[in-house]
Length: 281
Image (spheres, rainbow, N blue to C red):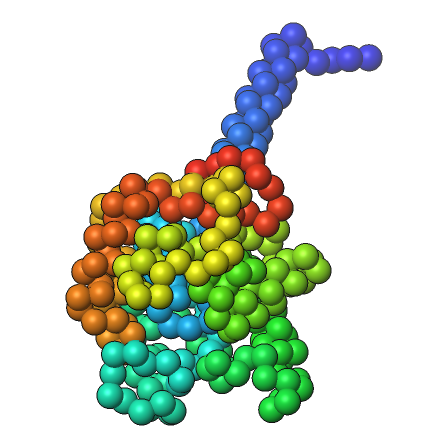
């Protein structure tokens, strides 16, 4: 026999309703918090280049994404010991040390994280006769860094190496190899950066435009906008590389690139030609 009073039934129903509403509120709160955390999670962009000062080709958007809260890393493959067009420092360990300081100065100017210097021999990355394992060592080391950093997007030189430099070409090849092989930590969002014709002309007036190095315009389907603030940061970062550029070159290159780029940096994605203005979408 049921001895429960009517008011007990109403009380139980009311209690269940309150509990249900409370559980729903908790679930919605947890879902909202999870969504906010997912949306607010910092993305990671990694730029991989052969030498300190190569990052200049992508510098405005490195500064832009860092300014927007993206974790931006710069990985430099070689020690830079063989390159110093505007310095009296002899090639070798001392030049390598100075160039590493210049790389840190440039990273600070861009607002990105401290550069990751792998220290492989400059201009000798693919010297098989000197060390048959060097390229394999570089591949393994770079893969380890990508697995540690877990980037959402990658930037490097195109297969042309921008200037045709063998180290540039090899870095591009190894980065592409890791992406195509699905190596742990290597995202499919890989973008190639190049140097525009105007850049070649102003940096090497006597040399002229190199043949068959600059990709056709149709391949630059990703065009990332940047602000005047970002471009100013890129100019300051270029000025850090005093062993590579005179003040006059920095001035002329900056003016030419500012006028030529018109506030957006063109990149060629590896896997898609869909037009976009963001490396992460």
